[in-house]
Length: 329
Ligand code: TRP
Ligand code: SF4
Image 1 (cartoon, rainbow, N blue to C red):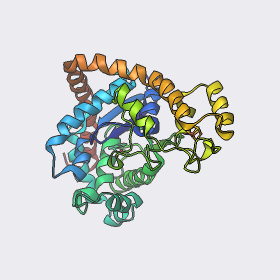
Image 2 (cartoon, protein in one colour):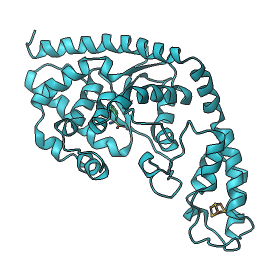
Image 3 (cartoon, helix red, strand yellow):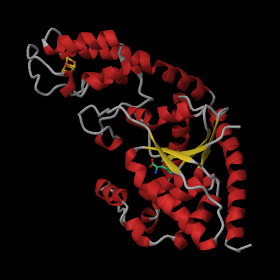
Image 4 (spheres, rainbow, N blue to C red):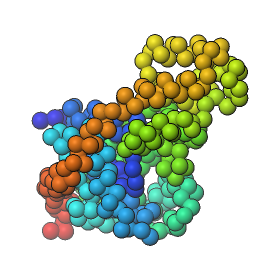
């Protein structure tokens, strides 16, 4: 029996890219041995921005599960499930929404940021304001001790902790655990154009990209902008491509690039060729795993079905304790 429980989730809103992998998923994979892990495909959360095209969410949920499995989440170690299959998430969200003061949600920094970021749909909904409340329900239903999140999600976790404290104070019974953020240090990886890697910027390398697509994307990658001509010296520290070498290439190759870039002994084209080679090699295990998984799509559905069974039992029990604490039984 593992001592501590982890819960995390991702919205099914499209293919995962290397930013998602190095920013979260890789960390999840390594947490599986030490913790009892629950990973939720947060399809109701996805609805907050995809409510105009909800028909895409089912497909995305399946794709997300495939991405997870190909990256190394292991159904023998972790419980993976689709949020909306456990109706207790909705029930607890509703109950919590009665005790959460609206100003807590309005002053959440990610609320405003996301509203500014997402321009193609109206993000002024009641449900979007309550996003952290639903996320809190996700976490505390499973009495998770830790939530692995990026720094940008830390304010959400603070709200979760405040909600738990408020519930315990109001009903004088400790049903939940105050979840703690588990923030991992993430290597800085930008997109092809130097902006943050994002599906909407069209600058992402997806973990499901074919070898050909990856090679083509590396060719188009922005390098040191000061290095306009082949014989201009470059600076790996000012280069958008070099961080990929830090992840994928061996130290000897990196040492060589560090010196040969600064003296213009190599050009960016040479450097891209080297990266293509190491990166394709590095991504190979995921690509092969994906092939195996896609050959047996029924297994993916079975994994999610079994995950939901296991998750549901835990969620039902917590929900029962919640009603009892509130004397609603
Ligand atoms: N908000 C998270 C994201 O967009 C997804 C999420 C849903 C989540 N429920 C969660 C993350 C619970 C951590 C814990 O990435
Ligand atoms: Fe970047 Fe490599 Fe070009 Fe140097 S040689 S600027 S590290 S791509």
